[in-house]
Image 1 (cartoon, rainbow, N blue to C red):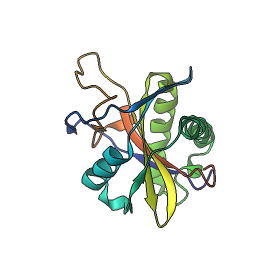
Image 2: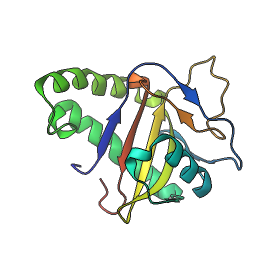
Image 3: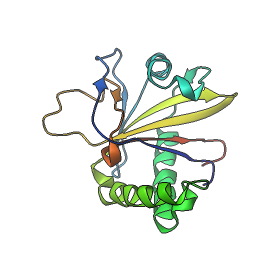
Length: 168
């Protein structure tokens, strides 16, 4: 699992993208609720919000690929809970002590998350950008039509990259 990149952000919602067309593909496997962004929407969102990923374009993952990604990410988080250095191999003592409870919090509420999946290509390799979030009862946005964008979301809003070719 060393190839999985965990991007945990802390704080508050800063923005939610306006509704996009067409609707995202819903994925429900009994373990999670997710949405696959269409290729065009994925490309727009990654360019606008995550330019530091240096995405060369987007693609639309399949249902099987996102189910595989979610299962691998859950296993990765369970392993990181036992040894935080799995997620942050170069982390300072301070970073490790701060991030360990974040991983524990994520796992405690894991079944509450919804996930948006965006297929991106980085350095010629297909990756799946996984956007995890917990919707509040007062949230009127529709994650099946709008990309949920959060900076500083703590364990309520976080992102992780999954690489299908390496299953990590």
